[in-house]
Length: 320
Length: 320
Image (cartoon, rainbow over all chains, first blue to last red):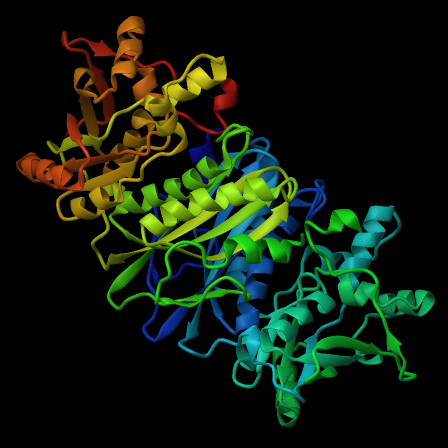
């Protein structure tokens, strides 16, 4: 089967069918139409086998996650997803793998009204690059730079589940289906991000871990933050690990959560809770923004806790 | 040096500075503005070390070519380049390599008014994925599907130079600087593609070789073509190889030409020549479109020539 046959068979206009796609897969470029008054939001991300997923990970999960990480970026700006492009590098043309991959990708794309409009398939080490494209009314995007002193810091969902699943899979110990789903099929918080656009002052999605990602908000906004560790939303399994070890690095720095971290004025916290309930996605306040730069972690007894392990960083991880 | 330091140092808003970039590198998404009445044209391509370029290729050439192949796709639709995103996968953070890569990328981006607006750096086997974004007035794009019976088929530049350079580099024989430049620093025919928009009925860029790429136009337009091999524009070196071997596969199927192949009504051939002169890029007519499907090659003596080697295909090449 040739490259062109592959593309035709699995990737022709996969996902939703959108009327704003003047020309999809199959020419030199896709031709796309952006609604009047909207800005285009784009984000590109690569997942490589052996780095971002296990080489024997089920292909549908790779397809799901490759799109999910991009949708999570759109969510973090408050953008409405529209289109995706896909650059897929494969060591060989294994039809069963490609079929599974496209199935996982298509299911998530369809659920979010996203159409695949372009792509490239090449031979090489297994790797997936996806660019997502979304719409956002001009000037309405939630950036990292808007956090204000005294804003409340919130996160969606729970933290550290994907990290715990990864730890278990690496160690070869039993991993519950629920935890494994959190690692392999993360849920991008698209509806929540869209609805929070009106009230969030700053927002980011948690890909590298709360500690490192929140630092990006603090740096961009030129502020600091104090977090109450006891307020971090944890699943029972992650809470147990933290209780046993006294180490908060798992929920703070293991990464791959794909939850949203955002800031709201204290007076809008109730509104944020109402939005979260409507979106069916729990949020929790975990601390507040302060003028003094730096990120402080406080234990329940009032003592400060120091993290030694750094936030996930692709080039720094080798030094860990 | 961390991933974030790397990005900051080399890739912050590299290339041209554009006023339609509301937010560039450094947040979850870039925010971009498309002019009223224009469609967005996008194309994504991956170059992998050992497949699309030699692992020891100079990094500036990799940076140049990674962007050039995308600009060539924009040219083939008649789109005006605007932005690029870059997903760079590196085995390690070698500053010298990254500096050279970004220099080659930036030079071509600046020359075409392109701004780098987003990216991702990950660890893994050396690979570069670039998405290009351009503008095109609604309905004005030149597609592959518009070729009409009796249209003249033209190509820009010369064919087979990159293929001959690659052959020499693989064999370890001497390769002239000029040939090597054709392989490593291809020139996307952006101005030519833009100017041809008014008269070309169908267009494609030659990445896989004329034979395979023209077949895409024929299939999309549901027509056939007859080519006069003696009319193929060849450099002296490629002409010598063809004369010695009697094999036309080098200019027809070696790929990596990044020239434009397009169709025009016979009455517009003079206009196309005038445009080509204004763009400083020679074009040659090489045959014509016919109703009977299939692609025929005719020798000067009127005999038909048959190609045995297939057009470059990433998954089929292993069977060659």
